[in-house]
Structure formats: structure tokens, C-alpha cells
Length: 330
Image (cartoon, rainbow, N blue to C red; front, top):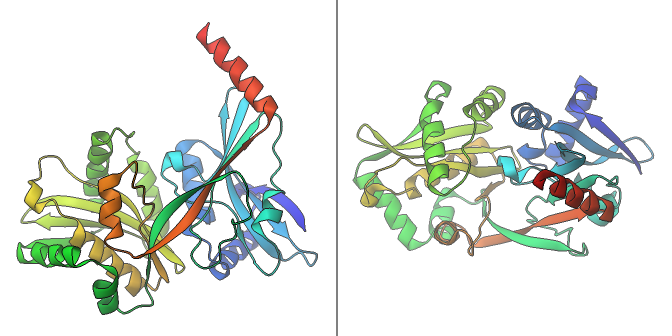
């Protein structure tokens, strides 16, 4: 196996086509795609590279997206940067050719580099069982090869089904937002993020992703409307392998009895199935940190799968980091 590290500008059109074909064939996510990472690089001023692995016949057998962020003398490598709302990264690989353990050994860190690594959800075969020093997280998955009726009655709890029907009776309408109405979601997203103490997201982030993906239907924004008031919104993004419930939005001062998102979520699931994705990802379940949201998601999926968080840094990185912090305090 040989390894090559390339930034986006070094990729030819044939390289991009090969990467996209490889991702489609080996259960890659939209968060591994060149166009998505190009937007992240531009908006958040990272330096993006792929680590690409080839076999003896120069056939691509694995890839890993890497975003470099400079912090003084230090460089932090993210695969992928969850700090910018990218939930998954890590190796996508041909399981007949290599393994996660072999590939993790190929990521080399210099004295001033640290790695933060998030894997993709391990739905069928868990390639991280033998990896040491990892933290396990969970997400909920819905199998979209099931019929809508089976999803509704076998995956979604009775309580949530009743809430879906109640929203319909009250006149809540789910609207798919055109790009010129994306501002509705962006405003609500930042209101919600402020309410839970998170930094707001740049509207340009979502606008550019819609420019990349809206025409191919790999991204969609939806809003729940009651009469003339938008009471909730959200964006899903994905590909034929998996569609992700990515980012939510909610305005202030919506009465509790209409602040329901079950119908909104149900419509996004229907969209993902119609689009042709194999799975719908509820995008992280954290019962300890986000208890209410976790309970809500757990009533939409009985299929809970792991994904993993791995950090690595050399002792020299720790020494430089400590010295840098001391200098800042002076």
C-alpha cells in the first residue's frame, strides 16, 4: 500500500471522479466529498487535504479527509471538524483490501501536530473493534429500504405517530424551502444555537452548500408553517448511501403546543427515501448532554449504532502547547 496526500487544487477532474465513484461504492458520506470539504475550507479558512491509499495496481483503496487549522506554532488536524458542524470523517476504505487498524498507522504526525478524528457510523461491520484509546458515541439509523408504512409503525413510537397526526389536524404544513427562502432556516438556526450557547453559523456556509448540492437534491431545507408563521426548520444533506438530519432551527416565542418537529422530521424521512438513500441518520444521540433531543430521536429509530472519536498527539505537541499558553498569559 502506498499513501499520497493531496489538497483540492492538486486533484484533477479524473481524480475527483475517481474519489466520487469510490465513495459511492464504499459507503462514503457527503462529508467526505471534495465539494463539501471545499466549502468548509473556504468558509472556515482551513487547509484541506485527502490522504489517499493505493494498492500495488495503483487502485484507490482508501481515503481520509483532513482539515488543518493553524494555532500559533501548532497545527490541529481534524477528520472532520465537528467544531464547524461536520459530524463524521475518518477513513472510507475497501474492506477487501485493507483495515482501519492498518490505515490508522499510516497517519503520521509531526512534532507540532495533533489529530482529532471522527469515524462514520458503523452500521453493518464495525471496523473499529480492535482500535485502542477511542471513545464511542451513538447515532440512530433508519433503514430506508423498508416501506414508509413499516418505518412509521415499526420504527417510530406511538407517541410520535400521534404527534404527527395532531400537527396535521392543527394545520401545520411542511414546506420545502427554495434557495431564495433559505434565510428562514438560517435565521432560525442561529436563534436556536444562541439559545443553547453555541456559536452562530455563517449564512454563507449554507448558501454555498446549496449552490453545490441543491440541483442534485443532495441537500434540502424544510420549514414547518402554521398559518403564516414558520415554527421550525431544518436541513438534511447526504447521498445515496446515507441522508443526515443535519442542522435544526427554531424561532423565539412559539407556543409550546405548536412547537412540534415530529411532522417536520417525518417529511424529511420521506424525502430521503424518495431520493433513494439507503439509510437515514438522526445524526448523533447524546443522552447525557442533550437529554431531551436524545429521547426524541430514540422514538424515531430502534437501530442504534456506534461511531468513534479518536485523538492523537505527540509529547512534543503537549510541550509546545504548554509553552505557547504560558507566553499568552504574560
